[in-house]
Amino acid sequence: MKNLSLILLSFALVSASCEKEKIVSENDLPATGKNYITTHFPDQKIAQAIKEFDDLKKTYKVYLDNGVKLEFNRSGEIRKIEGNSKLPDSVIPSQILTYVTDNYPAEYIKKWELDDNRQEVELSNGLDLEFDRNGNFLRIDD
Image (cartoon, rainbow, N blue to C red):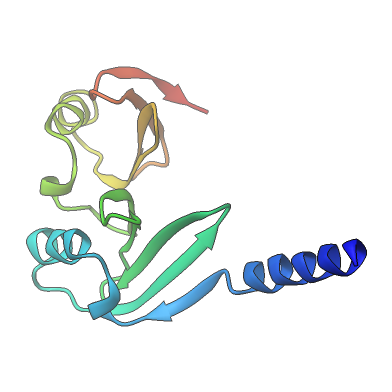
């Protein structure tokens, strides 16, 4: 009986982990995420939204018509933005934007990412810059 319980539990865990991604409608996105999109990308439509489950974390990946990809946490807070062209200044923390403008005036930011302890941006020339959580420059990331 004990072995049967273990087999059933294993089967349940495997089947639950099989559905890691699910396409969702715009209405299924957290309100905070939807508001972020309408505030910073008012002229863009959502091309696709995906709810992703990974290691007990739920995230939302949103693809806009202009090719920008956004990633939100389960609460709808932005964690990552990447595009092929210049990101709107409004999505970049002001201290980071000032640093890039002052030190790399010919470049623009095409990717921004936030994790637990740092922020990272990728410039149009491919250079990755790392900042602390408060936006203070740390280093050029190889």
